[in-house]
Image 1 (cartoon, rainbow, N blue to C red):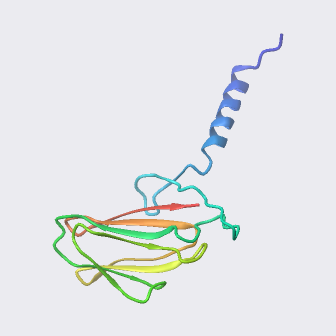
Image 2 (image 1 turned 90 degrees about the vertical axis):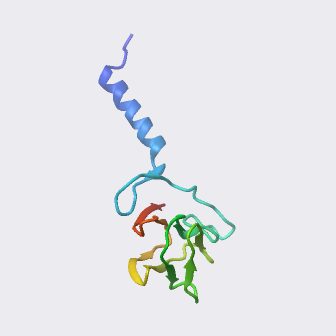
Image 3 (image 1 turned 180 degrees about the vertical axis):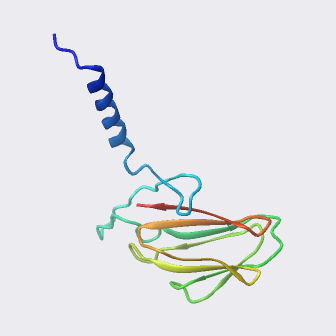
Length: 138
């Protein structure tokens, strides 16, 4: 009987593993930890990317932060001030909507990005005023 070689078994195992992991994780947009990719949603409109109602950006201001944090978004009319211990989320109003966002800490611009229709970002303002960023792309 012809048994597969060790190399063939390893190759098949790695192929199966690779196929099962495709799209499961994406790296941080600016380095850092990996984040699980949110499931792609399918709607009546046929949306296969970040659909209406999905997060564009979330800004989380940690308790203990004593400064001011303000978020401006090109896809919204008003800037939003975020207090210590609060978070704010901007969601898509239409399928695959993109948005330019700028975050100011104590009046200083610390984050300025255009978040495309296939991405989602979470920015955390630490108690020392520094920021951490995590993102996913589908």
